[in-house]
Length: 341
Image 1 (cartoon, one colour):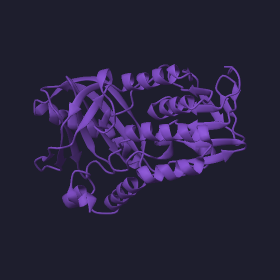
Image 2 (cartoon, one colour):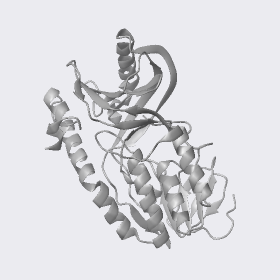
Image 3 (cartoon, rainbow, N blue to C red):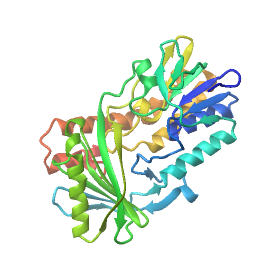
């Protein structure tokens, strides 16, 4: 590809972090190009699609409101947290809306464009042989970010996930969480989305080979209880960073490199939630790109996310180092007061 004129900001990745970063930089007067290897925004979906109610999303991108959280610890009856508001997204529509907004602000969004390498001089080599260079490079390219690797900010702690979409037998307005020693380093979930539900689990990478059996077991349980249909409508999965925030910027020659979203390690180490953090950190990255202000960017990320990520990381590591009995499982989950002490 050829970029018309000088590129002020080059964004890699057009998920929530990248689209938000591109839009904010363009809004502040930058010439922005954003690339994504996918053919279209948000597809294939690799997400459980739950966001907190505090994230400002309404309209066509929302599939269902969430009111509560039910947590199942081993074989105990559910512990219900009645006030746990959230939204289930149509993630593809959500991503597409963010990209449309960015394009409306003048961002050149290019799909089906892969990156072969991010060089130490800031050059970005594409799989079609093109090399692009920008004043600022924003890595919003996921947990295995090529931009992060170039500046030596690498997510080394990950959770591997598997998810299926199945029919839901009756309307359900709570997120169901399954905590068990049989789901090592993670948890299982059932997130309702209208007539269907996203059913999945995440585990430490050493146990990735057990994921299919874990999700199948949760599915069979839901079928026996009459809550879930047998047919699997979709399958997805992927990696989530769970090691906490990375150094979110560096220099590649004369190019300033910034990281946002999962590339910066901003997913919650306990819940894996990352959409809200991606949107907010993307906006901050776009602002920092416009003003070339990496120190202020890092400070703002620490102010917004630092304490919550540090607590979650501490709880995760405590669980991994303990005997995962019921008390330990509850202490490591956000629905219980022990987590917050």
